[in-house]
Image (tube, rainbow, N blue to C red; front, side, top):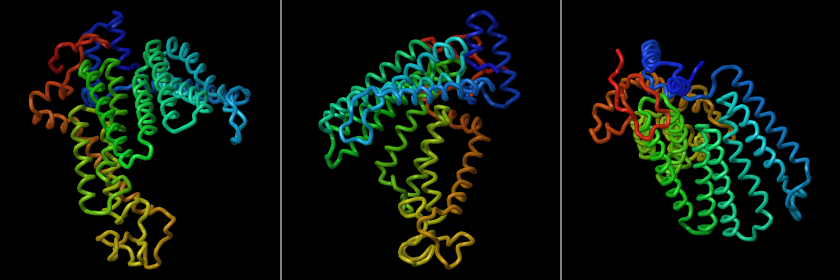
Length: 413
């Protein structure tokens, strides 16, 4: 199994002619009835050997972490649950991540293991530095500044990993570590402030918008979604979706669930807006991120949850669908008049909500390409020129890291 990026590399190296690569992509498009851009190719799993290497690296890093925890080297913790902070555990994991990448990423091109190592390297460096500075933390502000500095150094180490190994997920890890540093710093500075949590969510939303802009910059360099910029853009879109959706839900005041029809309408509108963004930029990560508000709305419509999707019982004793709460459509079958255990989740309501969501996802999965064409046709020309191509033919030349995208090619018949 060969990825789109490897086909581009073969074209650039002269092992495959550009027209042969275009013909191959045209054949796959016609067979799958899906344009190349809509597939959102990502080098993750190319065969069972990739899974074997991933598992091997994971077990090796876990073993290195355990071995480091047995070495009594690290700052002492007075009156703590442990004698010393096991600084060698994350340090060995970080060193192991880099060492394994030298072989499995540079030489074996193991995609899944490389993604794992890009995450473990950055996180291990962050934990190592936090273990070093924790004993000298004296107050919330000072601790926040030190941990933010640790996150910045870990982001720099992650960027070094990117320069060395060029794993597409690494820019996302680097940006994520930078966001962690910003959030921790602001958390310390705004500790005790009445509007501190609101400020944090606004900052997270701005970080998400910045990640979205970065992702679109990569996407604009590869509108056919066949080069490595496509993969970098996909990872950045995943980060942007997480950073945008959760703050928006919080700022809308429905972070614990919905309790009114207005809240349901708000969540449905939010889902539709994110689905529209997903269609415009051709990134399904925003659909997955939008499932959480849709789930909140579906749970309330089905079983009348007030604040918590799992809290479907009526605390006032009025019965399911009674005067103080509950769904206006009555109880699901099987509830009877015995009530239910308030500590147990409403399994029937959850699966009913999942069924509603599955219908929406099936519709998007079946009609994604036609819906993209419709949305593309109604967009203003200024936006359409920057959006991914709705009917892109296979790319006829390789430019995986070109600063400017090649001129548009007509669709291949």
